[in-house]
Image 1 (tube, rainbow, N blue to C red):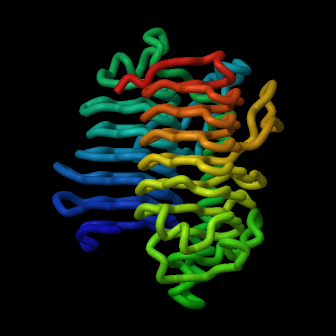
Image 2 (image 1 turned 90 degrees about the vertical axis):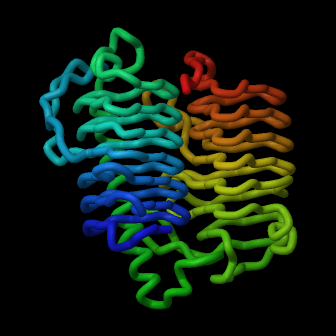
Length: 364
């Protein structure tokens, strides 16, 4: 949704995903070429507006507000990789705002990452070559610059490779969905096809055993997703502005849904799938994202899955993780690169990562 179209400028190959909100009522929004605005992203401009440069990733649920500059300036290196100690430059730079993060009137330079469930506050500049750690709240420039304070780390070559892959996929989305729309505008609404790309086979969802296409459906359900529930049951159990997209990774297998609140997102990295159990409850703005767990530096571990009778709290994030039966994930918490045993409870505002080797609080 775009408020005040005349105040919004989009560059070439910009992908804007379902239910993203660009509010330029009070100030302009500009987004440079090859950038992407993913599902449920909220951009609300004020003051001098929001300026987003080229090759900027706004991942699912990211929030940008106030007068913000993202990826419009900053060094291309050289940087020193803290893992390998090698020096590297990135002359075609990216900027990555990860899941459920918030940028409030800040400047985020190029070659940076703002991690999931983290925040950068008013007047702060995050310099090139820095990564905000998950759940951290950056309120001063000292915090943004100094790793000693435990809120930022240095950019790695692996970070750059991940960003380059995300940009490539979303450029393919921009082209693929444009081609679907040119063939028939009803191809890009409701329950519908995924575009056929180098990483996805296309195809339609199967709901209650029936391949289904319904362009008038109020939520977006896309691609190779199989639902145990019938369409009638989904109508009763799903909220609004929901985006379930098997247009990158596939297939998704979804058991019976106990309830799904507004603004929920399912997605997966290319070549990965999602398996979701029976009786799962999904809170508002919950994100379930497919990906393989990283083991000894290699993403060859188990894929994202959720067991039976699991509850996901509002603004929770599940990524590269398996959640055991009858577990519960608290509000604004994230489970990353982990396997949780049955009946595990993750408290609200907690980052649980790498099978418990990192447990930290969300600071805001």
